[in-house]
Image (cartoon, rainbow over all chains, first blue to last red; front, side, top):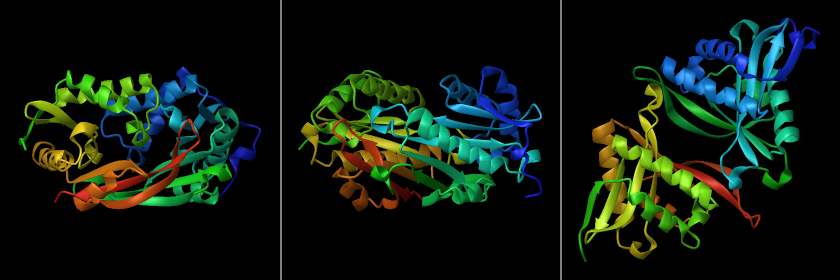
Length: 174
Length: 164
């Protein structure tokens, strides 16, 4: 890591709002490889769902010098039996990677999960080779299992998907 | 014993499905708990009728089970699919589940070009023995995925089977 921009006063985090849709769309487009998105329509649909989480205060926007550099979100689960856990999502602008943003994103999403939603665990589903995986592991997420050949990166070439989880409460410790 | 036959699921089958899920103990094996959650889940399932990915089993002309492929329409993950199956309690132990899964596997392979099926089952559900017998292998467990009103924890088990 060259410089940690998250230490700067120019780095800020706020709740995501609907005006962020365009910026989120651009970031998702940049990293389609790491999301189950194949077409522009699917990207739009996914981005709108993400923004919807912002309305529930479950998404944060990361900014540096006033420019959006990433997003984190909790995709809240629809059932009462699953209200104690959630899948997390993170995107970081490729121009701002390895400058402290990924680690800060994970830290803030953990905090939001614990304090904002009283979640007992959080999990991520990451394709092999995803730039975020080392940061999740550094933050204490451990690999639960892998599903082989989960995503077809290009015709005939597949990558596995790993489920990474972190428990915030001993009650649900894996 | 009457033969098991199949037809594409019709939206009207949703009422029976709701009724089966409503029976005592059935929801222990599902994430839904309340009537509104069951309604949402059944309504979502019935949307797949239009895609032809849901099939209904009948014995003697009576609906006894349904199974669905949750197609996602995302090209790069369209080679595999999550499925779910529900059999009327009154018809359990008569081979309906096995026949439905075999039928669903054939549908997945021939109509949708699916190469791998996977399922999510919660610990304690005896249907896991059927899935094992049909060649599904456990690939992972997520502990305490469900916590019910009584505070009971249920682990989620993910199983897969290659259709190649």
